[in-house]
Image (cartoon, rainbow, N blue to C red; front, side):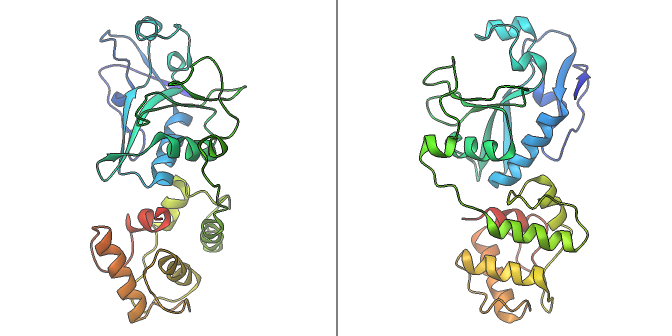
Length: 258
């Protein structure tokens, strides 16, 4: 579903995006069109990438502006279902090769790198035929049916994220256990904190995750003792987080850490 906005409006659309970021850059006073599905997927992609922010370099385009920047006047941007984006982590653009793979996992149907430095990417939620492209090479057709294969990345079955989703579902969430830490998963897990003395399967999952990332929490016994809390503190220090209990945005980095 798309919504219309006036250029005088600036509506918060999600945690990281407001409507003005998507407005046509032609400078004319006309209605702006933005897809709710596009915003939802972009927000989920921020979480999946572990990004700090995303900058929309081009969102909605009126037909005249689309032609002015090299489009055909009736592309995905003119329908309000596309955005060109740069994702950042710690001030550095995330390579669009990685972004393309994660966007593919989230079900974007139009994905393409759009510059030779692999920092900006086109993303859209078109219906029908998918377009997985690289405009540095060509904008005429899809270059692949699988970005993991095309860019030579290994696709890992993210069983630990599936386990986390199952744990959250046992606590009353209604998540698809798909191994993708999208916005809904992150929103659910941020309802919880891990502090000294906590016990249970979520605590055990945190211990296993910390051990995987190289922070020694000892045996994953589901009890947050001194060693677990020390591992949490080391994880927080390394990632420039507040030290103490595990909660809030700590989860995003814990889940998406490599």
